[in-house]
Amino acid sequence: MKSKTVVSVILAISLSSGGLSFAQGNSDRNGRGHGDRNDGDRNEQAQGQQNRRDNQDRQSDRRDSRAQYDEHRDERGAGPNHDFRRGERLPDQYRHRQYVVDDWRGHQLSAPPRGYHWVQTGGDYVLVAIATGLILQLLLNN
Image 1: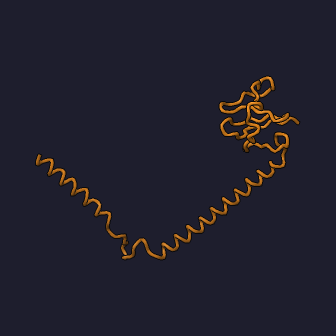
Image 2: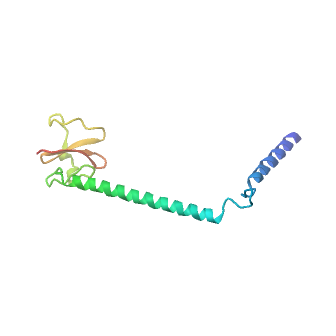
Image 3: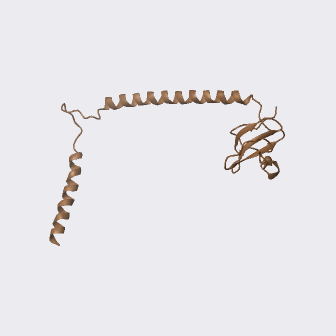
C-alpha cells in the first residue's frame, strides 16, 4: 500500500514539474522577446492585406457565378409561363398527385432516381425531389 502511494506522489510531482519547463520566457540571445511589438504589427498588417485579397477574390467569384446564372435566366423554363428552372422549387400547386407521371416509360422518360418523380406541367416534364420540391431536370416540349 505504501509503495502505491509513493509511486503516485512521484508521478504527480513529475507531471506538475514538466509544465514548468514550458513556462520559460520567450527571449532570444539578444534579450528581445519573440513577441516584439513591431513584428506583431507587421504580421497583423500582412494578415489584413491577405484577408482583403481573399475577400476581393470571393466577391469576384460571386459576380462571375451570378453572371452565369443570369445568362441561363434568359433561356426558356418549363411550365405554363416557362418560369420553372433547374435548382428552384416547384410551386406547391404542382406538387399534387394529379401532376405526377407514374407511367414514365409511356412518356419516354428515364427512370427517376430514388426520392424523385416526374411531374408534367403542360407539355413539359420536370424531375422533382419528392420531399423538397427542388427541380433537378427539365424536359421541354418545343
